[in-house]
Image (cartoon, rainbow, N blue to C red; front, side, top):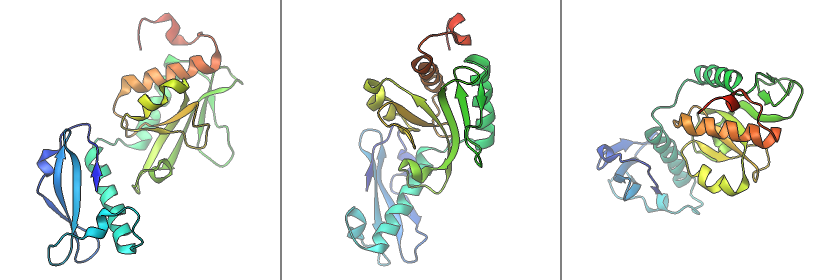
Length: 214
């Protein structure tokens, strides 16, 4: 299996990691930004388990190994995942202090938090905790996501960044989901929030409008 990397992880090359499945292990072949990350599965006699390399295989063993490898890779690529509650407080505070101070729970029986352009206006942001698997990531961890509105022509460029995905439970053409505890580019997150506010409000009367920068 292969993945693209945004930074070198060459310290992993050649290393072997035991699998949760008995008699199997994973070996890292390459782990550089230039060559990408390649992992192979080895069986009990240290031979390559080729079914692991076939995405369409019907083998339940191979599929389980692939899911485990995806989880490993996610942890290697995002070791800086931050605490969800700390992240929630950090970004809620920033949005209220820097955009407009209107927010509330839009749904019953959930802890979702909607950020509105006016006290009872439309949302420009929706924050909630979801399993990363809901975003297409093979991980058992949770993500604190913020759905924000975008210009459709910017979508592909934005979702190429770590921690930014197609929108969860919203129009995928006009919205994206930012995993706030995964994405480490705070400046980009702030820019996305500000853009979303302007897209929804259709005018700029945010607190940021009187400031020189984010």
